[in-house]
Length: 200
Image 1 (cartoon, rainbow, N blue to C red):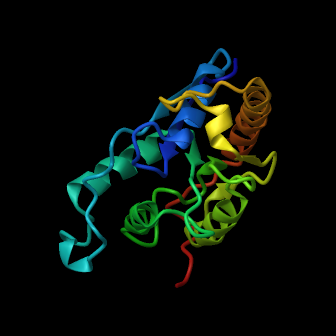
Image 2 (cartoon, rainbow, N blue to C red):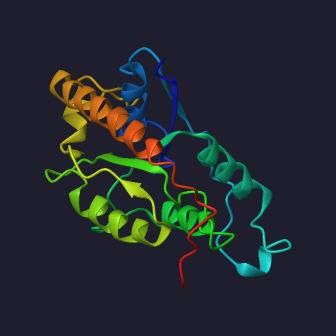
Image 3 (cartoon, helix red, strand yellow):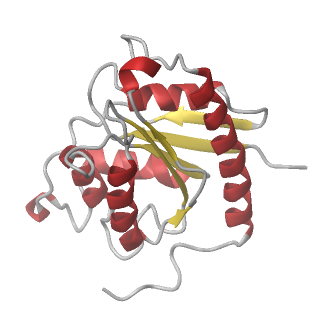
């Protein structure tokens, strides 16, 4: 019997009506039987990273709450905007916090997929590329394809950020199908994030 999968979606934008939040909502709507995609709630209270805020080596409670949701998920889907050829500073700050406590961060060996949408013609390919580089540090298990980088967002989402483009929705179905397979095969390897400590 195939075990149900619980996926977590994290939106890299804090903007109301975010296209990237809309992508995650559309993915959740397309989830097949036995798969759920929950969306991380508001993370705007995460403070700027400052190691003086560590409590006995642990990050603040608001960061620990996010980390626990990541750990509990079978796989993670990140939807990122593209700001200045990279990811939003606030989102990078959240990721930096999730590296604590080292060496066994919550993203280690976690199946992870990337999607993104922007107003530009190039979608979020540069932003996703920058994010892939950062995620190498975490030892996350990152799916390479299919790439979902939606451009010209104003034409493909309504004013509330809901996806209205059926071609994009079809691509999301393909992405989700592949990511479910990727997550199951990765989890079958039985990698324990508390073992095989890496060296800084």
